[in-house]
Image (cartoon, rainbow, N blue to C red; front, side, top):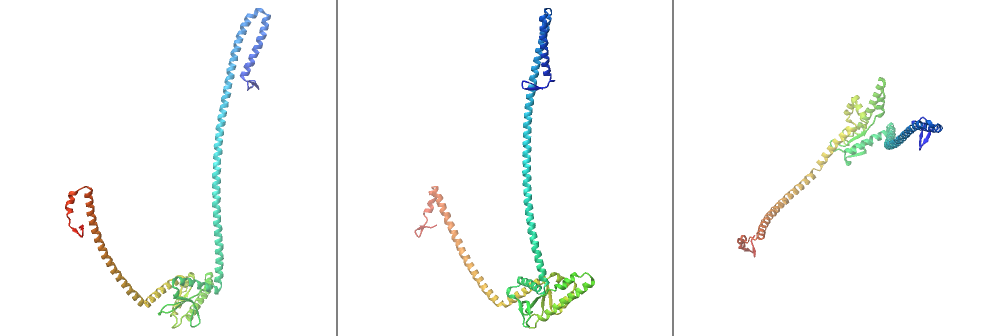
Amino acid sequence: MIRIQGQDYAWNDPWVLGIAGAVVVLVLLGLILRAAARSGQMAAPMLRELGWLGQRVQMLSDGQERLAGGLQHVSETQAVSQSAMLQVMEQRLAEVQRAMGESLTGTSMRTARSLGDLQQRLETIDKAQANIEKLSGNVLSLQDILSNKQTRGAFGEIQLHDIVLKALPADAYTMQATLSNGRRADCLVHLPNPPGPIVIDAKFPLEAYEALRRATTPQALQEAARAFRTSVRAHIKAIAERYILDGETADGALMFLPSESVYAELHSNFPDLVREGFAVKVWIVSPTTCMATLNTMRAVLKDARMREQAGAIRRELGELYKDVERLGLRVENLDRHFGLAVKDIEEIKVSSDKAARRARRLDNFDFEELAPDVAVPLVGGQAAE
């Protein structure tokens, strides 16, 4: 490489070769001049040759300058092109960086939002799991309650109390009422005679029913059915003997089963037990049918109380009739006063219309039209309207 005027050129570059050729020509020209000085006879042809060579050298030098200018223009063009390309590349790189930044920002926002949603769902799952654990504890507590006969009886009594509380007024029943025979009934509904107070007693043959549900073989099913029939028959007999008292209670009683499934099993597969209950006037009810029966009792109580209060109702109706008569008289008086007020309003409108006409005549200076009205006779010192 060789540096000329700040530019690097290779040795085999045409411009460098041209300069080298020119130098060689000049060296040869010097040698020829030296030889011409020695030989005067060959001076003229040599001078012509030298002149021609000088012209060629000058032309070669001009060509080399033009070539150098072209190379400089090419280098400047390349520099401008490189600068423009660098600017374009920088712009593209900036756009790519901005796009990547926006994409990363959007991705981070979506990731944060997804994490937030995931956190909320995890919190919901945790709450649901806590509720499930609480429900499992309640189920275990219910199993513990139902596994004991005393707590199972209390469970039936509480459910019966809730149903009665919703269906009847507070003075229409007594919970844990004691009868004359010393027996304590779960609920005594105070119905009028007939039929008289009726007892509702809660029974829950859960053990026999669960054995019936767990039976898988025909023999086990037969034994469970026998045990279930024995348990229900014993409950029916106990209610009939303890809670149906002549002259004190109604001639029948209700056996409350706090389970719809036990009630359905009894009516589906043991209709003979239902008939036995009917025979001794013990009617078996479930929570649903007990609510319907209590609503019927409520209608009976309402009818009885209305009969008891028939005299008071008639007195209240008489007073109501008097109030209606007074109201009619007051409406007639009001209508009469209203008619008088309407008449007064009409007369006021007539006077207002006359006054308005007089005002328009005065405003228009129509005194000739006023002449006939001037001679109106006076009434009490004032012109009549």
